[in-house]
Length: 66
Image (cartoon, rainbow, N blue to C red; front, side):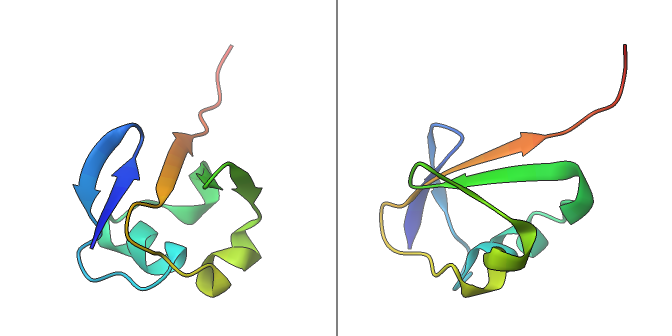
């Protein structure tokens, strides 16, 4: 299944939901924000949010600094 991740077409690598996609990319959940089809998600929503062909996701890394 193909999704659009951060503006680029990407293979979802068999991930059924947002949480599985985050795990596939080995991203630390506490340091990213996710928007799925224009909706910002809370981390507890990731496992319930199913992925579909052509879904649009934005992964935003949160970094501390000044």
